[in-house]
Length: 415
Image (cartoon, rainbow, N blue to C red; front, side):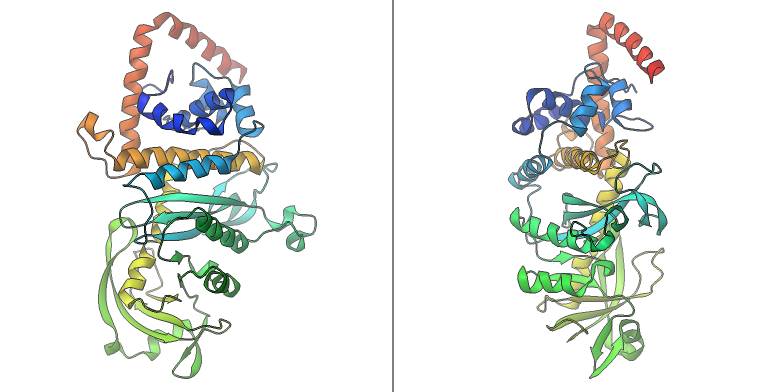
């Protein structure tokens, strides 16, 4: 399979043409080839490798496009989301949820802005990385990124975390919830894990934004049970076994899991409004060592089963991060400023969206008589289309292709 990119397949270019208003003509050319380059089967996808595998662009133009060109990534993202909302197969609805989480991208260079030794969730350890806080829409059929905010650690500010320009991950999470409302996305609840379960965050969602949320309580959360304040991890021991009932829900990536549930309304210390607590005995997977989970929500009308079923949709954002990194080079950038890194992240979200829309609409299935299940399988079909177009172009422009090979060889030597 060749990686040589001559021109974009019509199905991709038709999609990219919907973003022409965001760019000047030169910037749009670079945009088109950068996005198409994200689909190439390269060992390392970055500006250099993309330009080495393209007939039409050079390194300087692509570097300028990502770092200096005047285009607004928020405008690009709004256009991407509008496409999703205008498509009946991808538009948001109250059957879905808004998920907040963060992810890390390992970076060993000391000059990359925001790259510090900090928690890297994928391996649950401290390492040098960039961290991005992101929002995603997830329902039982589809999931896609909504927006993101790069996190800049306090040590990069003059006054540390006391600096007026510093924003914590929870500050960024609050911005992303407000951003989803401004974009008029439809969803039932805001979901986040126990790390984001901060009192001021949930109060803001409840009292200021008038939204419902679902989270998981840390083991040391203090909960009122039968008139006494106890830690969350004590609930399983205090509730009689015959009070739990079994419920099966869809867990990560469609797998089904059975939990034993008991729910009740109560108060949590530090939160001034009543909440619904669901005690769930069971594990999401073999890697889940907890054995029990304590879910908390201000959505008081939900049943225990509905709370766990909706919280299970939170795993969709983990699948999004995996697809972004494995399929469209989310963590393969080689730029140093957060401005350029954030632009790259927006472009990978757009590439992911192209694969998602074409998969849900069956665009490639009509060509290959195959029904891809995952975004990765959809990418493989697109690469076949790209290879066929490339092979046909080479056949029709053999002399130009030979000249290109010589130019490519000189580029590699120069690099």
